[in-house]
Image 1 (tube, helix red, strand yellow):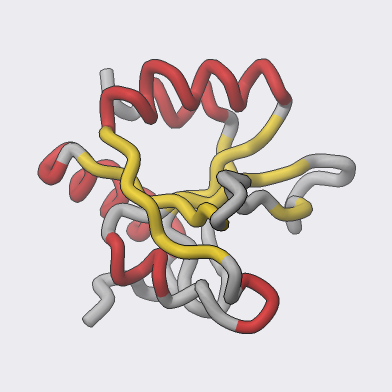
Image 2 (cartoon, rainbow, N blue to C red; image 1 turned 135 degrees about the vertical axis):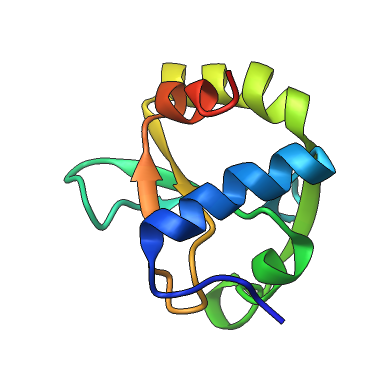
Length: 117
């Protein structure tokens, strides 16, 4: 049962709380090793890569046009120390705990990294 709600800010806070607790972040990756990223709904000409704080909430999205993807775990330290730097260099935003309706926050990687300080 998901803990995600219509409150986008609360879902982002839940992301940080749960990932600190489990030391795990979940993203969607296909068999070729490509991680899911989509066009931003908030910022023109921007891409966003969504992540979730648990496997079940990530796996909900592995249907329809994303059926080729599966939920893959990333250790929290690698997510914060490596992924946030790479995504910042690539100009890719970070989506946190998107709901099944694809509603959620889009943040700069540097802002996400700061949540863990």
